[in-house]
Image 1: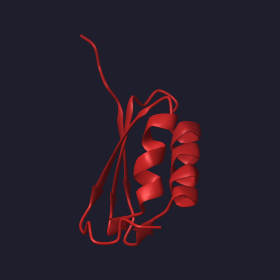
Image 2: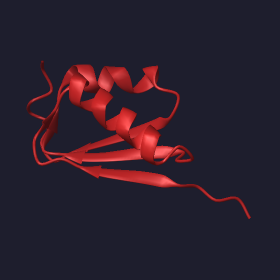
Image 3: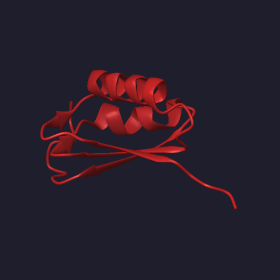
Length: 71
């Protein structure tokens, strides 16, 4: 049976593009066989949402607030 490995990251702060780069880099080093990264954060910058498609892994951002999407 096929298995998927999903990495979870929790941040109690605003997610920016540089922080997203750090998270994905760390997750790729520690979980190289992960097929998806889910990031739960307080809010996320528009640039973080735009950067999702530039990675070779599926990324899902779950923000508690959508008011701070400008960067």
